[in-house]
Image (cartoon, rainbow, N blue to C red; front, side):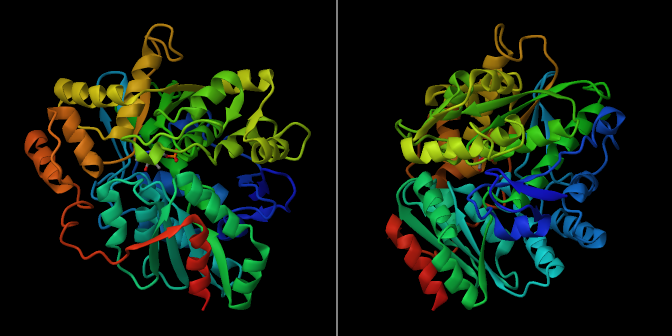
Length: 503
Ligand SMILES: *Cc1c(COP(=O)(O)O)cnc(C)c1O
């Protein structure tokens, strides 16, 4: 499989090149040249009820065909096992009622869905370097809204031939997220707080990536940048597998007839997780609609409703910080595919993103907007609704969800109502649950009991008492760990952090 740039002005790349580079030289994102319909018809059912690692290998193989088969099989086995994920199925499906099935993606080491991709991605980097006989040192730059950072640090720490620097918004992540990152061990890790929001961190990282002079100086020292954000194809493709696995689990449980339709509902920030669902659909998995659920940062809802992507708006800090994003990177990949697969064609991706940079806004033509809206159903909810949803779901079913998952459940309810895109009589919905409730325990406890202890760890303990749900291992013992990373910098200082690593 070859990879093209969404902006149409870079040569096609192999999977190994796409993963090592992270971003294409023309500033675009790498997308697979073809999305093979390998899951259509009877194949969607596959080995219904089969283990997740098997499905993962099945899905990854066509996309990473330049890696030797045994290398890929070894990567899957080492990434997804009882020592990395504390659920025997790796990801698990919990039915709330006959229609809503919550896909728990947070049983990995850092309690967020990003572990699914970031436990395996370090093996991709190593395999890609081996395939290309590349002996450079890889410097991974990460911008995080909270969860990617820790998941990437855990994936890459102490891996040979790799260093990792994580930038997160100072004051913009939860206390547990901050402590998770600040206590990271490993000689090859660095974590820096940036005075700015997530978009500033992401824009700063992209600027470092696109700085040709800096790259040259790195190259002279035998170092090359890569990225562990979902702009990297190596982050996205492992996520396709869990939607396939969830579908097959529903078939095995008799909740869906083999080949019958489902809907997906995904709490969305950078549009990566939902895009993985779209790839599963494009590969033939019988997914009817994709619900794009947002918090108050509802730029995507507006985009799918009006066709205009408009950055000139206020940024809101919410209780679902991993979705507090205005520049939703992976939308670019979706637009590339939706607009016909030529990013340089007039009135498509390159033009839109040039316009976005110049004017902070672009708009797509109405026929394209309508095509996209036939697949993606957008919606957003405000903060009171998030808290009310957590409380109501817990009281009604005894099931505890985090704030991000609550956004998805609430938007799902709206869409399942009469007049909603899914409607009252639609097929089962797979709702992605992206974090353990213990990762956002303060807000979850406040939602359930109205209590708001000053201390996040008191909230964790109280939540355990109230819910009886065991505390996630990512959070247990966190308070006792020494903080090793305490640096804070301005946006302009991000560059210095990287420069220092050169000397
Ligand atoms: C990253 C994250 C999201 C958003 O996922 P995207 O792929 O960026 O859309 C949602 N919930 C949680 C808990 C996350 O960590």
